[in-house]
Length: 461
Ligand code: UD1
Ligand code: CA
Image (cartoon, rainbow, N blue to C red):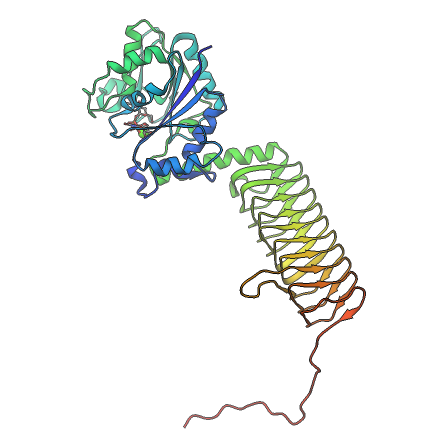
C-alpha cells in the first residue's frame, strides 16, 4: 500500500482573530489548534506529516516542535499566500512519489481520526476522495457539484458561483485525500483566474473528473467536526463542542458530572468509576482520578494524581501533587508542586502544602503552611502552624516524626526535626530539634499588669 503523507495547511494569517499569536496556536481544550490536527493525523500512522506555515511561522515551529506530537513534523514555508493549491504545491517536493496525500487545515481542529481514515480509504479506491457535509447555511464554503447520476463533477467556490450553485447545501470541508502522482500533474496545471486571484486546490476536482477519475466522498459524524476557527467567537464555539465531547468521555468512563456543561478538561484526564465531579471544575494537564473520588465545586486540578476514594472539597487548588487514597482535602486548600499525601491524610481549609511528603493518616486541618517538609504518619498539625522554610536565601527542610503532635500557632524554623511522638506546645517557635516522646515548648511567661489603662484618644485642638 502506498505510504500516507499528511499535508496540513496552516499559512493563514488569521486576521479576524485580532491577535499577536498565530491563529493555529490559539488553544482548544488547552492545546493549540494545530496540535489537535497533528494528533488526529498521527493516529493514522502516516509516513510523514508536513505543515505548511506562513505568517508567524517561526513561532508555530518553536511551539509545536518542542512538543512530543510535533517532533518529526516536516516544516514547509509558504512565503507568499497564493491559495490552497499553491500551499499544497510547496509541500510536494517533500512528499514521496507514490504517496497517498491527505490534506488537512490547521484551523479545523475537531476532525476525528475515524473520519480521516474513511477519506483515505475512499481515495485508495479511486485516486481522489473529499470530505463533504450538508449544511443548513452553506454560505462562504465551496459547493459540491454533482451530476444527475450523483457523481461529483467539481467544486465551485462561493465567490465564483452563480445563484443555482449557491443553493447547493453540500459543501467542501477542505479535507481531501489524493494520489500524489496525479496530484503533481494537476497542481502544475492550476491557474489563478478566479474571483480571488488564488490557486485553488479545489480546481483539481474538475481536472480529475476530466481524467476519468471517480471522485469519492465521505461524511463526518456531524458538522462540528469540520468547523473552522476564523475568529474568537468560533474559537469559543468549538471549545464548547470539544468540552461536550470530553464530558461525554468522562461520563462513559464512569464519572457523574453534576453539570456536564460546567466541567473543563484541558489535557489528558483519566477517571475511574463512580467519580463525582461537581460544577466549575477545571482539570488541566495530566490528571488521573481514581475510583470513587469526589471533587467539589470550583476545584482546579493540574498535573496531579488523586487516588481512590479521596475527596477534594470546594474551592481547592491541586497542582503537580499526589493525593493518596481516602484523603480529604479542602475546602479552600492549596496543594502546590511536590505535595505528596499518603493515604487518609486530611488537609483542611486555608492549608498550603508544597514539596512535602505527608504520612498516612496525618492531619493539618486549619490555616497552615507546610513547605519542604517530611511529615510522618499519624501526625497532628495544629491550626496556624508554619514551617519557616526560607531564610531569605535558601530553603531548608522540616522533619516531623510519626505520631508527633504540633500545637496550634507553632513556627518550625527549618532546618529542624521534631522527633517521633513529640509534642510541641502551642505558640512555640522551634529552632532546635525537639526530642522524641517529650513535650517541647517555647513560651514567654504570661504577665498581667494591674492598674494598666488603655490609651484614650487625645481631643483635637
Ligand atoms: C477553502 C476551500 C473551500 C472550502 C473551505 C472550507 C479552496 C480554494 N477553498 O476555502 O472550498 O469550503 O476552505 O473551510 O481551497 N491556506 C494556506 N495557504 C494559502 C491559502 C490558505 O495555508 O495560500 C490555509 C489557511 O490557513 C486555511 C486553509 O488553507 O487553514 C483554508 O484557507 P482559506 O483561505 O480559509 O480557504 P477558504 O476560502 O475558506
Ligand atoms: Ca476558511
